[in-house]
Length: 529
Image 1: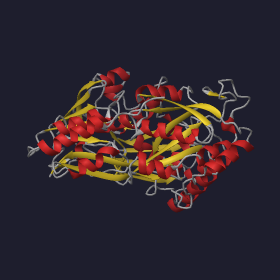
Image 2: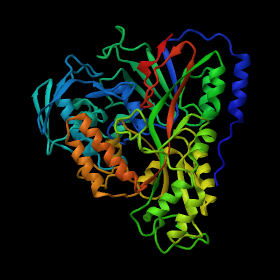
Image 3: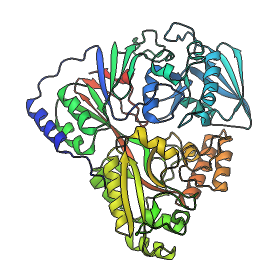
Image 4: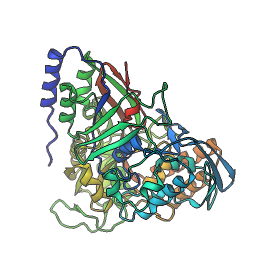
């Protein structure tokens, strides 16, 4: 069993800070931010994970952006419309310059939409966002038409996930060319100076940035993003003044930081939901056995009664109150309450260990079985402690559970390779149907469905509802279909839902930041107070 991270070092540092900290200096031209997760690449089309995307947003833009409440807003496209049932037209922003001074145009967009498909070694591809597009046409340098094989309402949403790179700089470039900075030429608020893997990302203000706020492209001349995946190190860096702001505050330290007048906190309900994937597609998944270590005759996760038993064995209220210290919401949906497609009628599974044991017995596992729960230890708030707590709860209903945790940089590659049969994942999406498409739709690379469906769950009726919704331009009708698909899928207990995170940031008192539902930490949005 992996021992949870100790908290005494952080608490001690906070006490010292409370007694010794003095007046903080006014913000300098440099902003230093402590990031909570490793950034593995600055190639914006290589690996679709939030830490990499968060870093990419500092340097690159997309056609559409989202605001702090995860609502779609203009980006490099100032407007878009459905010309007919299968054609979308995007009007591009004029006068935008890449970091090297070259002009942004429709040709750069077309190149960027085609590039993800050329990265065959991607461990988490972006291809799902461009699969529906069957033709691209530049009407003029600032008008682009995209054709889909069938009516598809989600294209403006999908294009929020495709970063626009310079065709001139990125033609023939590989991922290492982006990491070195050679090809990392974007239109974003900052230019890449240096990427030191596992340590920091150094950025310089893009004075020609199109998205000026208050007449300025950005407040900060230079930004340093420090990679501080250990909670203790991140908190210590803030208290010592080595960074000006940090993200993902450990719940044990939120109250103490809030009471310290030298710092300020920002929090918001996140779009991220934490849940457990179960292998439902293999007859003999790895790390499943009886309690003596012998192979099981069948895969218990293929039985909905077993999946429901595991869901009933978990006390979400206790997790929210003790593990998350009140900074989470028990989940009955794949998306949190503010998000499009959330189903109010779906409630968190009721904790009932007696019913869990009964269901296991009915499924032929009265004596339980043994499994290994895999989780990252530096990606989500209190992820390692969460895994340990879930393991203890499962043990109480006869499921012998071993916990193995590892850094996210290692974890996601192994998970996507099918090395785990029971694993923790957090997912954020600005709509419920998009979350379903990635997580529970039957894996189909041609359609871009099920890219993160580690468990191999499949329900043709769910997929049909999703396709119907994606072809519906009426937002109200589409939301009804999204809710119907979610209700149908979650009735099967395809994953074990846990909770919705609260996103949090801490910073020096003379700095302000607007908390975001999408959890992104944007240097451009930090402001002096």
